[in-house]
Image 1 (cartoon, rainbow, N blue to C red):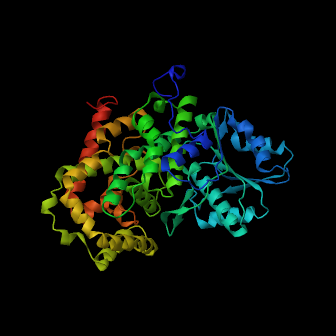
Image 2: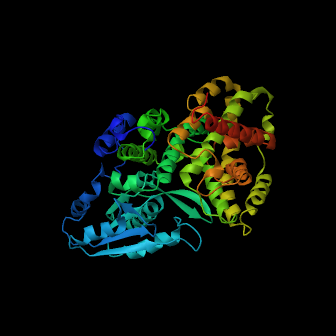
Image 3: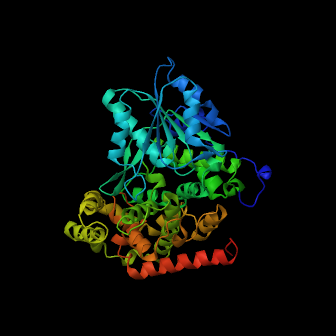
Length: 499
């Protein structure tokens, strides 16, 4: 907990409370004005003793009481009130008389566990007997388990009962109907499924290492910039605006970006608030069927850093921390484009590079981290789709430039100022420098990722406009990182508040 006694805190009012999941879906359908696909998730438990309801939850999923239980977990030590969490869950289930087995997944030697097809296949082999599956872990374990159940369900044409026990407020994967899968070293978001039940035991969440909460909130706080990327892509014919995702994210803007006192709390109340905010983020993406509303250029930068980890001889850093700090860079890039772009001075013919030029650039950039060429090939396959779409949308770009003054106003509506955002990070106890992350990241590596992130996927964001418009040069990068240092140094100097 930071600065405020827990008994002085109160829960903020959620307009879209994910614990009332049936009401959430009903309200979403009313807002959308149409029927929505019914997600698998139909029960969300969130309380200090939510874990105690696990046996009853399994009985509801398996009314006949004959199914085995498979626990999917990793080898990370976890505690609940100074008790080994994994042993506690297994004993709790064995006491019901059910047959309980455990599958513990491990990463490659010297590497963190990643959501790969190899790990998904391991889980698929273990669920051939159609048990009730429990994902006991944070985002990676949840993604692996839910995607294994998804693939098995498609093959067998049935839904495998799945319970997610959230062990940290780390990501929004627990309520997302998508999985982030690593393909040829590149992170890709693919359609998947949700758990039937989500258990958020706030005592478990409180006992998790603090970096998970700050990283999770950082991952959700990217809403300070991502809807600008979404609007930008829609304006240029490179993507679609999603009003439902925007509306269901209102609590993220009002509570987190609005800096409600509870977001600074690492205790029970703060963990409940953080858990609900992350659940809302995942649900917003699930309802629109796309990760774009909460995954823009900052996520692309983070993915690039993950791709570079192995070649740079380091572990993968905390995802949310990377995304939040990259959000500061994206906000600064937006500021430069909005303040300095002279729409009338752009030679539009130079904004459309040919495929050979871009393929050479992609090969050069990714050869630095993967000499096999697999990463370059994977990224090029996505980027060339973006490049072709960009050519076809040229009339919309011309209109965009002619209406630049109005477009600036529309973009600014979806942007938090870099100063306000750093204030927010400071308030939640988030690291303020890449060098201060639990896996320190050097400036050259971060700069490489930020400058080249537009090359790694087909999604269009501010980095694409900056590059294709001819602005994303070394001078601009120098200015952005200098401003980043100035802002973070200033907030540290003034004890956590910018003037």
